[in-house]
Length: 137
Image 1 (cartoon, rainbow, N blue to C red):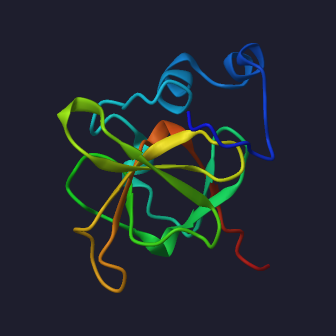
Image 2: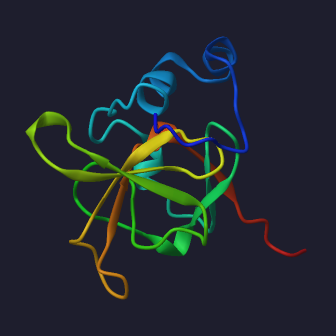
């Protein structure tokens, strides 16, 4: 977790009640899910990917691409949806991304994505909920 304050805050017990054990380990403990383990990696419908911690919209489905990494990857977040911090874990320097509303760890961003941004937001699928777009009747 970063030392920032966030609009949505919960006690540790509240986080544990809201999240599954795997979500808690990833989102509150800065863990990483096993690559290829999340069904959202294959989600292709139109819709929005939201933070599993606070339901904030993070990415539109049109911003998702297949990176071959085993995690859902996006080239551009929704405006204001993410914050970043420097992650010096595992003997490397990376840019961690977290939800700007609740501070939950989501994944990392790398400078090897497709145009137009050239960025790859590599996001743990368990940190996301998918809300499909409802077609007009």
